[in-house]
Every structure is written in structure tokens, then in C-alpha cells.
Image (cartoon, rainbow, N blue to C red; front, side, top):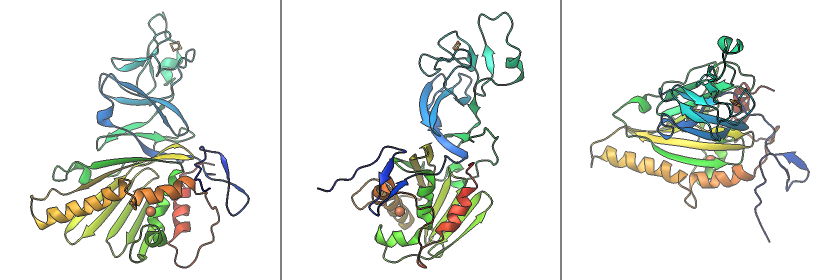
Length: 333
Ligand code: FES
Ligand SMILES: [Fe+2]
């Protein structure tokens, strides 16, 4: 009997080719990553979240600022996300009511006559740098705590009232984040997995932290900034639809893939409106888990594949190794 077994993250799996291989041998990369839609964390709220291989507490102070902090109180180790409470500008620990602001500074110890001097000098609770842009709370993760090395780029479509509010999708995947982006340069799979009539041609280039792909003479243009943000624009005639992808590593072997799809608002009933709606449907539909759908077919591959560190490639493959060289700058090993 055939059965598909999805191994637990990080486990080793027997490959049909024989031998044992770690499915996901690479660490969580550094960069800006989606941690929440802004509207999903209101002033006064807190949530326990799991990203970058550990637990964090996401909260929003009553003053409006969002924080992503280590869950364990620097005092005596209580979990801030279990019984903690947002109070004013800070998150209050349930155990002895020490309070921390979104940057990790200790703001109050209600029973201390003198605050420990270190609390004046530096944040004592580990807090990730946070930015809010495009209705998304982004956290900067770096395994060594290095400060942000770039800014979240401008995505004109997401800041323009002439565009429809992005349609959103979300899919958990049992693999590491690099594999998702590798799809964008793996031209051959578009024919064989996705039934595209031809294998499209394309060019790619890396520019520092950015990565660009021009596929099928400008029909698909990919713009990646760091590991956690990719913008893909599809052009048919005068109509452009934009797919923004912001995957977040849960760990080095599990990723939540999230996307938003948008296009310019066109007057109802115009050919542009129809074409944009069709293109959007094509893309969203691809992502909706329909039987031959885009994401559902990739998903089966991703959830079960292993990583070939030194793959045997042929001349019809895209520039997979160039993509991997680009991506390798985000790993600290
Ligand atoms: S353990 Fe958090 S205040 Fe004491
Ligand atoms: Fe794919």
C-alpha cells in the first residue's frame, strides 16, 4: 500500500534513492519577516507566537507600539505570554509585575525602592526590532542579535488607494524558506509540475540583498528583498497584477507562506477590470488548493522533498545555483 508520510520537522527520512539525508540542513536566515497583520494585534493585546525556532510574545502597548519579545521574564523566568498583561506602554509579567516596553526596557518594578542600575543602561528583555508597514508587523530576526541591515522596501501598490486591498492567502509548509523562493528560478518545473505549455525562459541577477528575475520577456517580474519579501508582477497588455509574498520561518524546517494579491482599481465592466479579475483569480485560484492548483502541487513536493546540497543539474534548468549563492548571504553558520 502506498502512503505518504510527512516527517516531523527536523527528523531524518529514508530517501527512495537509498541512504539517509537531513531534509532541511540550513539554519533560519536573518532578515525582516512578517509576524502579524497589524489589525490582528490591537492595543492592549498579546499573543504567543512561534517563529525563528522559538516562542515569542507579540504584544501591542496601549500607546500603539508593537513588540516581539522573548517569552521568559529576565527576573525569575515567568512566561510573559501566560498570565502577562499589557498595561500602558508595557507588558507586565504575571509573577511580580515587572513591566517591559516593546523595545525590552524594564519600565516598572512596583516594589523596588531602587531600580537595578542595569535597567537604566540597556533593555534587559530580548526584543526584536519591529517595523510596521503595509498593514503588517515585521520583525527583524538575526541569530546573533545584529541590528537591521536594510529597510523594508517601497511597494507602491501597497501604499496606493487606487489599488484594491490585497486578497490574502496563507499556507504552512514543512520545509525551509529558501526552497519556496527557489521555485521562482526553477523554470522547468513550471511545465512539468504546473502544466505550463512551455518552459519559459528568463534572466536573473543579484544586487546585494536584492534578487531580480525577468521571466517570459517581462510577463513575470520577480523582485526579492532579503529572505522574507518577494514581489511578483504579472503583466498582460496594460494590466499588471501584483503578488506580494512574505514567508516566515517557524523553524529551519517549517515555514508559513503568506501572500497578498492586488491590482489597480478599474471601472466596473471595462475589459481591464475583467482581465485583472481573471489574472487575479488565476493567481489566487492557483493558491486556493484546487486539485491541480499552483500551491497544492508545489506543496506536495515541498512537504516531502529533501535538500540536495550539490544537485545534478542539466542545461534546461534555471539558475538554481545562482539563487542559492544569493540566498547564502543571509545565513550565519
Ligand atoms: S518573574 Fe517576571 S516579574 Fe518576577
Ligand atoms: Fe511551483
